[in-house]
Image (cartoon, rainbow, N blue to C red; front, top):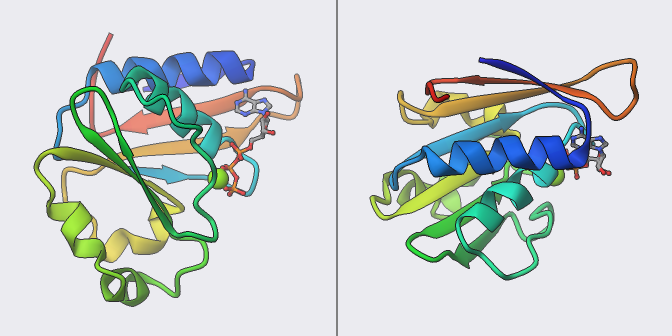
Amino acid sequence: MIFNCKSVEETQDLARKLARNINPGTTISLIGDLGAGKTTFTKGFARQMGIKDHVTSPTFKLISEYQGEKYKLNHIDAYRMNGSEDFLNIGGEEYLLSKNSITIIEWGDLLNDILPSKTIRVNFARIKSPKESRKIEISGIKFV
Ligand SMILES: Nc1ncnc2c1ncn2[C@@H]1O[C@H](COP(=O)(O)OP(=O)(O)OP(=O)(O)O)[C@@H](O)[C@H]1O
Ligand SMILES: [Mg+2]
């Protein structure tokens, strides 16, 4: 499924829509360049989960955990990790196996070798014009 999101609000609306269609125990891999919109998307997703905390980029913390209304959200940034070995060394497998939380991984393509086969992938690409547009492609799930 390919979406053209013309503003931050449209990107976050799409994230909220995805969140309404996700079951706990799911891993979502966000793929795209610096500033493509991965954290922006995660903020919308978190809001739909009923998370009131301010969601920030986990670039330095690597993993942030938030309590949603029904489930927990694990927000992971793989950018600074040296591949999946680093991720496993900080206890990452626990997040991939968790049945009652949802895990979102920015730069998830760096961990492709260990992600569950049913991982949902979200690809972000900037569109030249208008400047505030993003092409967002979601695979591994269908919703209307
Ligand atoms: N349509 C859009 N969707 C998402 N973000 C947009 C859009 N248009 C403009 N932006 C801006 O682009 C930036 C996206 O930054 P964001 O932190 O979400 O990127 P990121 O993919 O998480 O980057 P990083 O790899 O550094 O973590 C924000 O400043 C946001 O306001
Ligand atoms: Mg980010």
